[in-house]
Length: 235
Image (cartoon, rainbow, N blue to C red; front, side, top):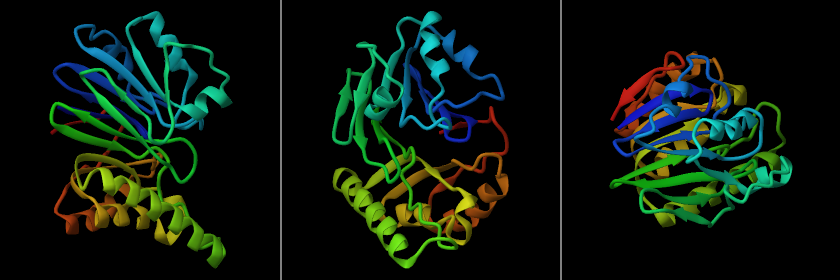
């Protein structure tokens, strides 16, 4: 399997039988055209919510190149983007998409939309979307911090009821949160055993990626220190 970093929270997971594009925003390394040409593999396009840094409407035009694309979107996209397309699979928390190749379970978010737990070829893959402990310690009130943390830990508890060990996790490491930028990721690693951890949602702040490596090493997982869009890791 290969994991390709597109940009921000966007990735391509490439296996022997399919390609999975998640949360495409923009493509500085021009990865997508070659993926669309791999017609021998099934192609899935997943989107966790409607925010512009996770959902780019250009993805709907890809079907002009590949009519067999399977779209799996969070239900909020249908509402906010007013999409009327019965071929798209819209999920809310608790919903499941399955077709014999992938099984996708929708979990919650602490912002909007969903997160994805994907089962494929005996592998488990989790893309957090905007699930994170999004409290801004340097700006928020104590009550706001308590609520944010409680909401996040509840979502983690729901996930852990389903699964306790995940092969690959893509999770936000966003330095805009200030001094506690790594808190949500650390709490995730405290609750769920992770084999490979990929940071995301760091925009172009590669310093945050490097800094979190020092934390991830304490959790006995492989950590991917992305250096640029278009980078590929085999796992």
